[in-house]
View (cartoon, rainbow, N blue to C red):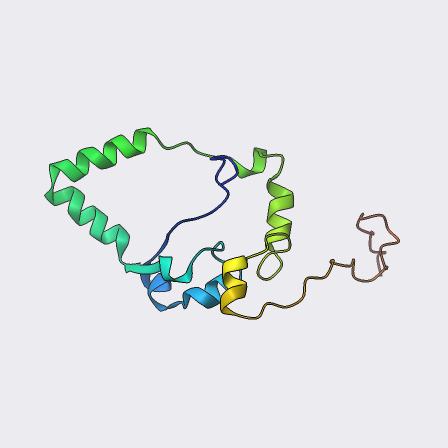
Length: 134
C-alpha cells in the first residue's frame, strides 16, 4: 500500500478454503486484513481454479490476464527500508500503529499501550543480550 501511495482499502476478497471459513471481523481483529468496511470483505471460493478455467475457456480473459501480468511490479520486502518497522508494528493485534476505526465501530478493541522490552526493563538499549554458555 505504501508503494502504491494508497492509505485505505476499498474491498477485500478472501480466496480458497481459508477465505471461505474465516470470519472477516475476526480476521481484522487479528490483523490479517487491513481496516475497511466489514461488508466489503467477501469470500470468493476457489479463485485460482475459477481463474484458470476462465483463461482456458475464453481468449478474452486470457488476453486480459496476459496484459495484467505485464503491469505487475514485484516488491522485494527484504530490500525495502521501512519493511522491518512495518512488519514489527503488524505483529501487535490488530496492529500497533493503525487505528482501525471501522473495526472499532464493530467490536471493542483493547486499549493501546506501548510495547515494553521483556526482561530487562529497557536497560539494554534495544539490543539483544548474548546468552552465556552453560
